[in-house]
Image (cartoon, rainbow, N blue to C red; front, side):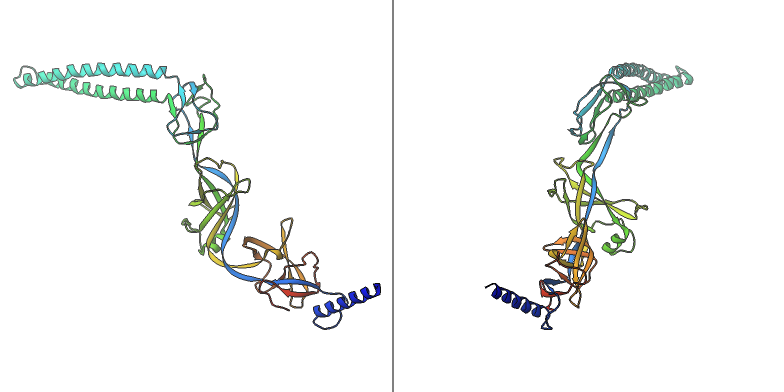
Length: 377
């Protein structure tokens, strides 16, 4: 019985070896039977991935316009505030006193102006009948004009006093997230003090992200020969993944291009934005952004199962025309369906192994079957 089993196994091995060697006889070692696929070229969108920090769209620095003692802060550190919210109150006693003094001065000026105007109006008919000299008329005229100017000056002084008094209440100039303040109630704050700046408010209704693109890649994708500030159509389908890997609900949009090329890195920086109505995205947080750049173009693709990845090193097994295996390192792009985009390492028309990757060795003889459009060798 055991003799029969051995004879059957020997016959099976002999038959398989003959088929894999195309009836050229039994080889010393049986070639590995694998599936292969032909490397193809497809017209696909060019998608690039960026990892960059999130920044506020803009921020406002809160600085008191007058010096005074801080009475209270009317916000919670790190919490949202709305434009127009009262956030700081200063002691207004000095400014209130100045306002009252300015109001009194204005009343006095107006009373003197009434007297000067009446004297001037009475002097005009007297001068016509030569009841008073021209010198006296000129004096009454000058006094009337001076009184009018005095009223205007007092009115301006009152406006300034009211303005200074209004500066004792500081309101949020924009909506956003307010940071903490080093000043506390009782501190003397304002210009010339150690608390010349009280806090900042970051507007994050819309956040910004800088996308740095190497100049050579920018020129290739954009089809231009030089740097341009008009890049509104270069990016499309801008997506963001947050820290947990999930995709953010809002699509991104192009905002503007930085003023100059970063000379130390040779990159052009495009600033994109994302609406952030619920403040889900925070400044300083790193995000993974994917964007389609430029028009569709020809890309080299291989099946995903033809690619091995170990410690960020990607490789494929290329099957040469003489049916021997060759190890190749490749640079990968994005995945499209069940295929990898390959940026470098292989050429269109070459054959790559899709099975038996762990068993292949450089120069190993293989027996080919086809997969995904390849041809039998």
